[in-house]
Image 1 (cartoon, rainbow, N blue to C red):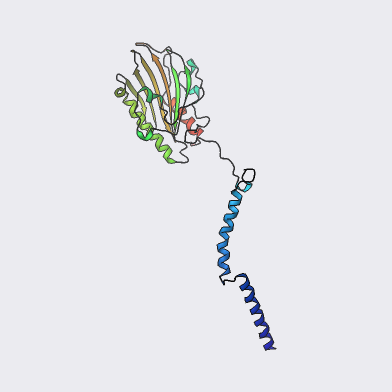
Image 2 (cartoon, one colour):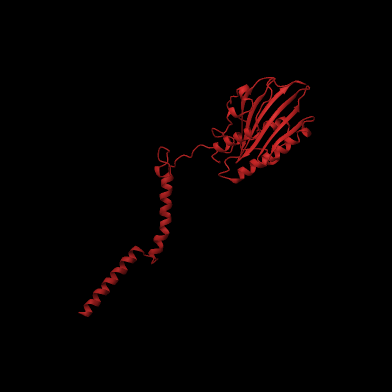
Length: 268
């Protein structure tokens, strides 16, 4: 009986060897072969799910929920809705009834209003800003006009570099504003706020022909953007705006100016 059991076991072993040899004729380790085949199989599956179907659409496995609209740096970038100051927060609104017009895209080389008025040279580092837009709030000849301009590097919630760039741009523009007389001879400047994040100033900038432009300037860096509100009146020599200045405190303007920006970018 023992010899019969040994003979049966031998036959079983020989059958198993024959079966393995047939599956793996080169005698390689089947375990390693299975592991090496897995990535290839996964890659094939991934490629298949990402590949477009016959009508050009991706398969459901490759579909993703579209991201929410936001300001995207670049020539096609637009500022998010709600980024502009409420006209009711702009000085002289009770008399001049400001109303924000449609935003105008100035392009990556767009400049702030004070940069134009004081002919401020911009540092090469900021020769281009991802998003620059402006909106007029109204005005009339011989009286105050108001414009808001926003230069944005995007949301600082996604990149601290955006905030660093906005504050650096503010620093450069502030120095140019304070030195307006060096770029426009005869200009006068009185800075009323300068705290590292915001600036307010009153300027008189001579114009050709003997006239001048009276300016009330507000600047604030908020997160990844620099917001500017400029009230200006272009006057003949010795002239005065038709509407006497009666603006409130600088903070009453700077706070809503920056608040609208951080709310729109969800950076508050």
